[in-house]
Amino acid sequence: MVLSLQAFQRSLPKSTVDKLEKEKMPRKGGRWWFSWRRRDFPAEERSAQREKTPAREPSGEKTDVLSSEDDAPDSPVILEAPSLPPLPPAYTPTYKKSLRLSSDQIRQLNLQEGANDVVFSVTTQYQGTCRCRANIYLWKWDDKVVISDIDGTITKSDALGHILPQLGKDWTHQGITSLYHKIHLNGYKFLYCSARAIGMADLTKGYLQWVSERGCALPKGPILLSPSSLFSALHREVIEKKPEVFKIACLSDVQQLFLPHGKPFYAAFGNRPNDVTAYRQVGLPESRIFTVNPRGELIQEPMKNHKSTYERLSEVVELLFPPVARGPSTDLANPDYSSFCYWREPLAAVDLDALA
Image (tube, rainbow, N blue to C red; front, side, top):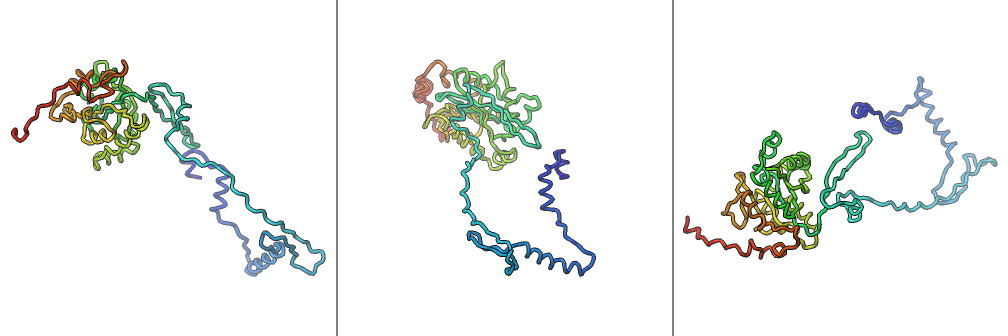
């Protein structure tokens, strides 16, 4: 009771206080000053209880029970009714906690195409109502999605990318905002996937909205973060060095939302070999997987010796990311035979042993 007053400034309900008194408070017993009275009291009490309590036989049988004096003609007769069989328990539905909505529940939300604002609220007696705001994105079944990492891909490095933007320092790769903006104008959707902890969601959203370059901002899209604590995320990324475990599971889950055997992911940007492993697991071809180093050098997986930049890639964005808003394109239907992949000259064969 004292803890309730100190923590919540409210007293416990009276029913709870009475229950605690019955369970925790010692029961009061009769005490007498004289020992002879204390010795005789239990015997008298037992005899009185025997006179008041009639003898009973096992339930289920109808018997006549007489009082303790059988020779008394006016002794009362107590008839015990047979006990009824227990009723079967009524059917009660069981519920299970789930974070996934069914198709009917999603249909009832009346979502519009694009971003939809939602609010989750939980009300408790002592802590009031807590609210959490989020976004639900509704995309078409044939939309093309571009995956982008955050730390080391949009920012120049992993560690300083957390600290310097909070101090007002722009720590973003040069040309990435303009490139993403041009890709988005061609009709592609962006999905940001990071191994950051879920507790940094507001911080990450604010940073992505803050980044701008020459009047261009990063495209809006869902931000998928690791549903774990900050220390668990750091342990998985720094000590275990397996951030791809979360990304593979997360991206595979998103892929199942589209048509069976569909390939919604078109290209991906990362900064580590672990990112490349995760992107390969979800069916992305190596020709559309790009990695960037802290110096801003962009590398395409099949041509690791050829280094480019975000600014140079934006010059050929029409070839690598053909527009989808103008209608279906043969380059998207058969990307291996597109103008960029089929008609380009193959790389010259180089004998590395001769150069050594």
